[in-house]
Length: 425
Image (cartoon, rainbow, N blue to C red; front, side, top):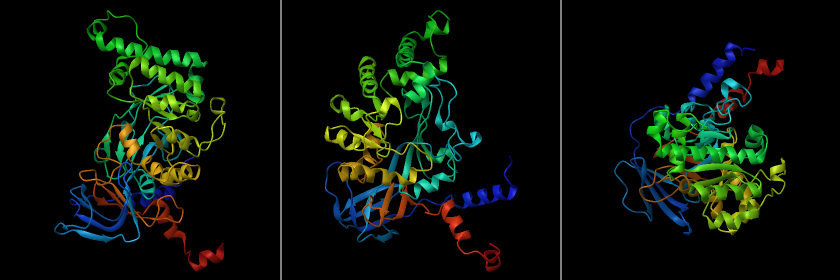
C-alpha cells in the first residue's frame, strides 16, 4: 500500500532539516576544565583542556595558548571522551527494517564476498543524526547475512554525501558461521566450515595462478573472479576477516582456521567466548559483543551469560561492544554501561566503544583523545554510563554537529496541539 503523499512529504521535510549544511572549515574550539578520558590505561585528566583545530585534536592537557578566533567551551563538571564507534551496525543502510525497499542488509546468496556495504550507504538517512545524538560519531556498517557476506565500511556520521562520510569503503570481510546464516545455508555445521575453507583455499590458489585462471587453464574454483579478488586482502593478511560465531566449539574452529591461513581474525557475536577466553587472548584476537545479548536464544548459544564481556576482559581479551542494529546505535553507551553493571571495568568499557574498535580495524587517529587524532569528540554532562547523563556537544572532524533529529522535530511539532484539535480528540 502506498503511503499518503502528505506522510512522505512530512518524513522528507523532517529528515532533511536534521542534516548539517556545508560550511567553511570550522573555527578552532577550546574545551576547558573538563574531565578528559585519555587512551590506554592512563588516568583521566580532572581539569583538562582539549583544543580542536583543522578537523583534528591540536592539543590535550593543561590550559595553554588559545588559537586566534577560537570558540571556548567551559566544560567545568563535564566529561570529554573520544567520539563513540559502533563496531557493527546497520545505520545508513536501514531505515525501515521490515520494508525490503528500505533495508539494504539482507543477502539472498550464501557467498557474496564482493558485496560492498559502501555501495548502499546513505549518509542522509534519518537514523544518522539519531545515532549521533547518542555520542556515536562513526560506525562500522557491516553485512548482516550470507556465509561470506561481503565487506563492511567505516564512516563518520556527518556529511551530505557518501564521499564526505565514508572513510574506508572496504574495511573488513564478513563470514557468518552461526546457526541462523551459515548452518542454514549449508545444512550442517561441518558443511558450513567446509565451504569457508574451500573459498579461502581457492582465493589463495587464485593469488598465485592468475595467468592460468585468465587463460582458463586453472582448476574450477568455488567463486567468480570478483569474489576471489575480494578475498585476496584477507588471505594476504591485509584485511580482517570478521567471523560471527557463538558456540565455543565454533570459536575454537575459527581460531584454528585463522592459524591455518594466517588471518587477521576478529570474532563477532561470540556468546560463549568466555568458555575459551584463554585461547582467544593467547592469539590476541579482538571480540565484538553485545552485552544485552545474554540469553540462550539458539542452540549455538546455550551457554550465553551476561558477564561475557567482563570475563573476556579479565582474561586479557580486547573487548569491543557494538549494537548490531540500526535503531539502537544511539544507545551504544547504554550497552557499555550494562557491561559495567555486569562486572566490566568502567574504563575498559569506554575503550570498548572508542579505541578498541579503532585498533581492531586499523583506524589510525580514531577513538582517542590525543594530539593529531581525528577531531571526533563528545562533551557529556556527566559520566557517560549514567542514564541521567546527557550528550551536550558532538564534534565530527572538529565541526560541531546539531543534536536535532527527526524525533525531536516530531516532539516539537506535536507537543502542543491547537486547542480546537485537542478538544476534538
